Image (tube, rainbow, N blue to C red; front, side, top):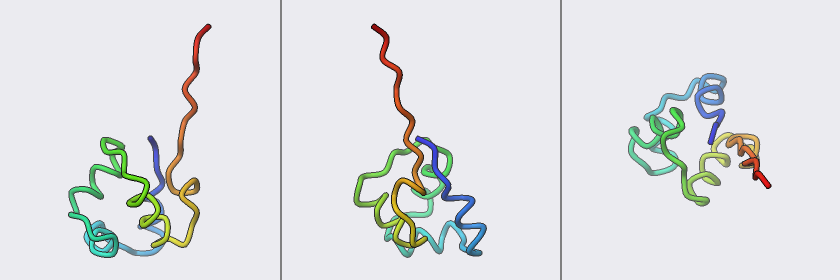
Amino acid sequence: MNNRIRELRAKTGMTQDDLARRVQVRRETIVFLEKGTYNPSLRLAWEVAQVFGLPIEEVFLFEKKETGT
C-alpha cells in the first residue's frame, strides 16, 4: 500500500519522531509505513490521517487488485 506520509510530513515540517509521538508509536513504525513495508491497522491509519486533517484515503493509497477470470 502506498501512502503520502513523507510528503505530508515535509509540508508541515514534521519529523518522523514528531509524528510517532502524536500517534503513540515508535519512530521505526513511521519509517516502515513510509517505506510501504508495514500496513497499518485501521485505527493507526485513522490517527495518522487525523494528524494531517485528511481522510484516510487521501493519506493511504489503496490499489485495486486485478482478478483474472
